[in-house]
Amino acid sequence: MSGLAGKLARLIAAVGPISVADYMSLVLSDPEHGYYTTRTAIGLDGDFITAPEISQMFGELIGIWCVATYEALGRPKRLTLVELGPGRGTLMADLLRAGRIDPGFARAVEVHLVEISPELRRRQAERLAGLASPVWHDRIDDLPAGPLIVVANEFFDALPIRQFMRTGRGWRERVVGLDADGNLAFGIGAAAPDPALLPAGALEAPEGAVAEINRPAEAIVETLAHRLVQHGGAALIFDYGHLRSGFGETLQAVRAHRYADPLRQPGECDLTAHVDFDRLARAAAAGGAAVLGPVTQGDFLLAVGLAERAGALGAGKDAAGQQAIVAAVERLAGPEEMGTLFKAMALTHPPMPLPGF
Ligand SMILES: C[S@@+](CC[C@H](N)C(=O)[O-])C[C@H]1O[C@@H](n2cnc3c(N)ncnc32)[C@H](O)[C@@H]1O
Image 1: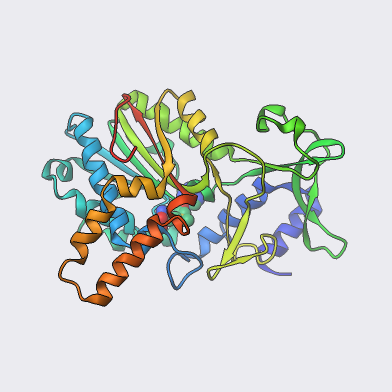
Image 2 (image 1 turned 90 degrees about the vertical axis):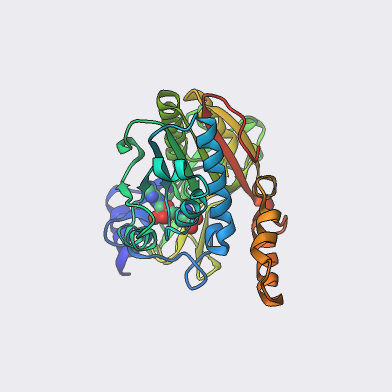
């Protein structure tokens, strides 16, 4: 056993089974072998594809949304424009290009990127050359003061979740340990979890039911909400996930666009879990922000002009070009594709109506 699998096996042999959250955190961010430390696997040639990589329309529509939000905020002189987990920088590049429609917005924005991957930071710098001079941060706590707009696409699903399972002895935390052959294997911890971590209805849930909780995501949303309350602004979040808290296992590994076993090839597959928008909305409200949505990504994109943008982009293109645009619209907003599984939610302070919700 080599690389991260060996490192994890040695750690577990020394300290005992670790939580799913610790496992996910090490697999994604281990400084030596972590998935986001060593790989840049977004895109057709990588492990998974994201909305901004499907079509420029996604980032452009978010750019227009940001301009409308800047307007609603009273056109501040300086605006901190933040992206959490910007991947290859494509969304920010398309957003900034579309934002040029309003020269006041273009002049006011200062781009800040929160990114842990050194390799992706390099890609972002290349992609944004000539468009912005971004400042990178490891954490949102380091963002500067002042009015802000934050965007995040498929960021929260990459943060570590804890899992709990209903067993014959009640609820227990799911852990990662070693089987008789020394391979990584799921197990059940001994202690009962704090009931506040479990969704409503936990006592009636059948044996085998799984509940997941993403504490880092909730902490980040609550911190963002505090910042919005202090400085004014809005945050726009897209991710796959559910509208209501409930039961079900959603931890998944993906490599080369195929599902994989989350415990095999750690560090070589992307590991994610669905986002619980219900809990995120409650964290935002606890931080004092108003919440818009969540709505489905399809509804959001159509409400902010996806069909109109597709029509304009397709004008003058040949049949193949138009077909590609229609396919991108279907991919982004179609109910069988990203349109329903993905959700959009916004946080604002002061409370204000914004396009798409
Ligand atoms: C699934 S990718 C999404 C990329 C991009 N938003 C897109 O839509 O193509 C997740 C992004 O979040 C970054 N990331 C993951 N965990 C992070 C963390 N704890 N702090 C900062 N960035 C993180 C990754 O390096 C990557 O840029």
